[in-house]
Image (cartoon, rainbow, N blue to C red; front, side, top):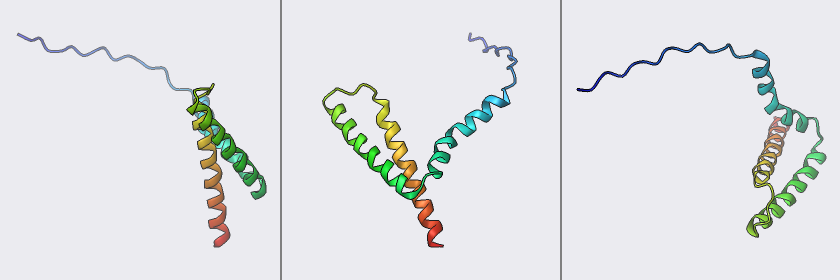
Length: 95
């Protein structure tokens, strides 16, 4: 006959630190804030550099010479941030 499963005793968790949560919330916005401070020309220049780096990373990946595979994702997301900001600026300028 199977015995009913016992519940594990409820453990008390320490309250989460608000400072850690606050810094985590602003960490994602820091990059976007840095980009917002740049001019349109600076964003275009940085976008060109990132696309060139992405191209080189793809070749390194294809030839198994890539040292930091996570860099591909970082570059791709940075390109997306810039394009998103450019779209926002274009929409506000159109209004």
